[in-house]
Image 1 (cartoon, rainbow, N blue to C red):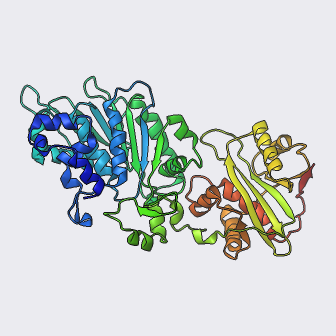
Image 2: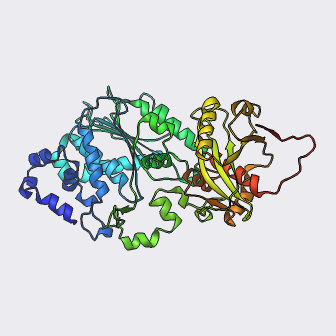
Image 3: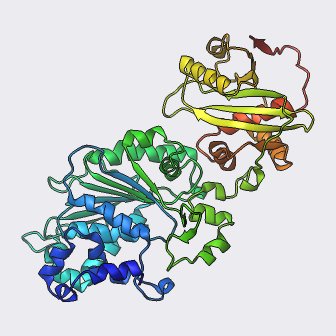
Length: 498
């Protein structure tokens, strides 16, 4: 047992825990003490030598759960997402211990839990009901919770695979995320707590299209069940551009997708290795994962994905992490801004990809200095481009892919200061162009001036990632400099203007 936990327990008189009423009073507003009192068997295991062990993350989760004891006063005000390494106990805490604490003390009345598959959700409910049936201390202290509601005939009112209703009126239902759930109620009760646990499948059975559908289900069917409900979303990244990956990026303050901001999720990302201000590294759960173990594993791709929630750690069909090299070239003489534009700025549309690419003719290599995606069109896009020209004054060419709405871009980018604007069309498929470009990356002919997270995520995720606009812009920019010029075929013209 850790020193922190020893000190915490030492603050209580052991004799008080021998009295049911004292146990109820002490744990009413203290989910951590509730866990230690009623669920000690879930807080120890072979990895911890049979001792009770807590990660600092578990302490934090208990602090956050105390919000459940407070009244809900505003819509969308209690929505949290927790992304953590696999086997850190996310489901144990958020589907069992903390819901049981809140239900036992009446802080919540109706929990609706969702998983990617209905079978997974029902297993979580079975685990919950198993504690109600076998946990003797719970059965002694909370008789109205552990007994199912019954009709006057003595028949159980709701004790099914997908639903439990207690004698005291608490309800817990379990569903696959794609179940028909509109208007879900138990009597007059609507869910006051929504738990979304691993709502995305493995990458092998997932795609950008399915991610979009899953997100629409969450936004259009699950969250509207009660806009005042407490919402907890827990999970681990399954692929680049996934729902959980969006939340990882939001937690890092790197990029907040529109849906995350719209639904007001507070994202929390817990990494397996904690770094102190002085650079000292410690394990997020020392009793379970020693630093020796983490050091030995941290260079594997599976560690990056399953522990660090970095989907870049998974083998890409084209690029892998090792294909990205970082540095700069003092011999660059030409710089362009490559744009892969989107026609609309709707939330469901593609991004406009932008990449600033410099070329060294002496080394025949390029440096990508900037890569980003924006949802802007018309004047807003033009203003953004003007800002990039001011930020990178060596840009002399703006090159726009005009496969869609080609004439539109002449109006958007007219009279850009000090640059020539070229439009071009791509006749080869992305698969063909990206395969050629991958060879340049792998041979070190393409450098990244610094880490370019969006570009690198899209590159590794292609063709399964949600978007590929930024890597497409970067490939187009590199191709402009590195691929030998080809003669224009009869009947085709290259259009340019200043």
